[in-house]
Image (cartoon, rainbow, N blue to C red; front, side, top):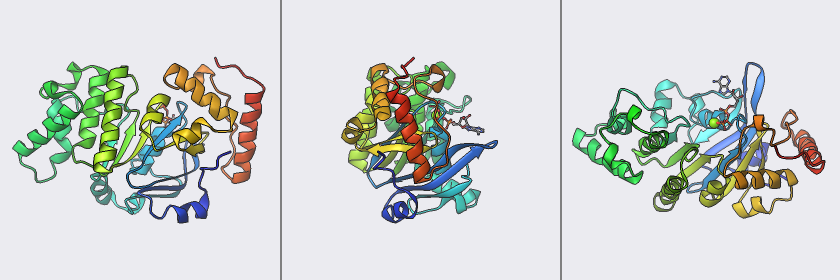
Length: 302
Ligand SMILES: Nc1ncnc2c1ncn2[C@@H]1O[C@H](COP(=O)(O)OP(=O)(O)OP(=O)(O)O)[C@@H](O)[C@H]1O
Ligand SMILES: [Mg+2]
């Protein structure tokens, strides 16, 4: 399996035209490796959905891409620039071209919704009237025009999430990273968010990475789906390729996620505990064989 996993130098050469290029990235915390040689290339206008169990490092990967975290090894380029190599000022400048929807909304409690959404424009030379106009347009996009002058504490969790989305899009970024944009939202709101992602992609040719637990959303919005497991992508492909994937573990992963509408954490015991190995092609193949063996042995979903 794993035909879609680009590796090492070959991957880097093939990915020369990528807008987001992640090559053999490792990241550990306290001696525990979370990312183990992650490689991914996203082309201009492409939307790639990242699926994976809770705690597999999806958020760490997004934060590493925007250099909120520094990788231990490997390289990352966004729109050709190596954020890791830049100083903090350079990183701040580069991040202005990248929209980031945080998993936990990350709103300023003391600012109104409008001020939260308009916050990224404060540094730019935009008049207050123009800021207000652009803020209202983005709030309209996420269905929250009426909430402009409310404060985050007055909003539901789902509304806060949509404010975070409006803020990420305020500068019409060419690259958008979404961390769980639909988790915890009702199906109708999920549909609204998915349509926004698709619209940005189709009308503005935005390049997007969408981390999600929501298998249905991933298959709806993504050109390609990548499944992160044990610090590497174990499967990458178009939604059709992933649906037809030969690996039973991938099949079970998708089936459970689709049934439940989302993928739960490892604590649920839904999936076999991964076997920790460095990401060499040989080790990866051994690990996948082990996952298959576990799957064939019929360990039951919890
Ligand atoms: N700043 C940090 N310091 C130490 N450990 C961290 C830090 N950030 C993440 N981790 C650890 O890295 C692992 C991956 O975390 P991450 O938040 O990326 O998971 P995730 O795949 O996004 O999970 P979820 O689906 O629940 O959001 C976890 O074990 C987490 O505890
Ligand atoms: Mg996360």
